[in-house]
Length: 297
Image 1 (cartoon, rainbow, N blue to C red):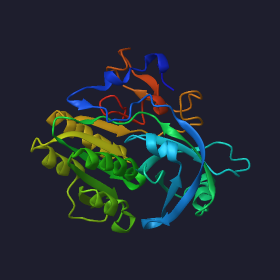
Image 2: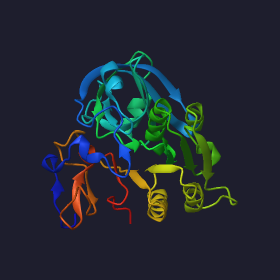
Image 3: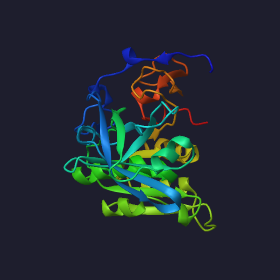
Image 4: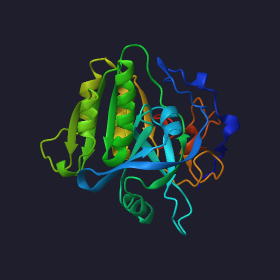
């Protein structure tokens, strides 16, 4: 790691410190206690291009989970795989007591999760991290994702639908067969623009986002799943004076700031007064960071 320090819990601002550029926290406060429960798999789905989606019955976690937060999950019988895996929350149904996670099978941990079926137990710790702030001035939100990065966007769209906030989404993938989450976004009233690498006629992301932002009806941009898309969104935010938030990825063992395994570099900003690049814990400061503070280059 380059020179810098880790901003720990003593550097963590209160919920009230998040009110910037006409944004405000949704109803769920950032300091809500997390819950550690043994839930039950209510359903297991195979979505597009091999993505798996688990519906987990864990009422305390589902009821407390704000948009943009995440959970740590593990199957009870993992053998030597002792550590839980972090996943953005895809969607919640507090009345049913369920939350959903979306993932692509890549390693042994996700293979174990993909093998779970309805009725199987699953350990859940959450909600973790901070909810993202949402516009409170009548303007809408732009959701930008690639691959499984659509997960927090569906939860944000769900919150926006409940609060009467308009949303438009740019959903990216290598091909149309790999697009995921579009139907769920549209069900929530989101206007979705799919973007695939195999479409030679497709506009560049920055062109699409610039065209949307020019109308002045959008208040914030949220990005997950691609540094390239995050850089495009950052340029658009700068050009149109929009608030932007990027979900960062980091390996972590605990999810709540004890292991310090998820330290990520952050640029100077309101929460990093050092005047130089420092390190913040993604599980405490994130998982979504202000786009101007995230190191994307």
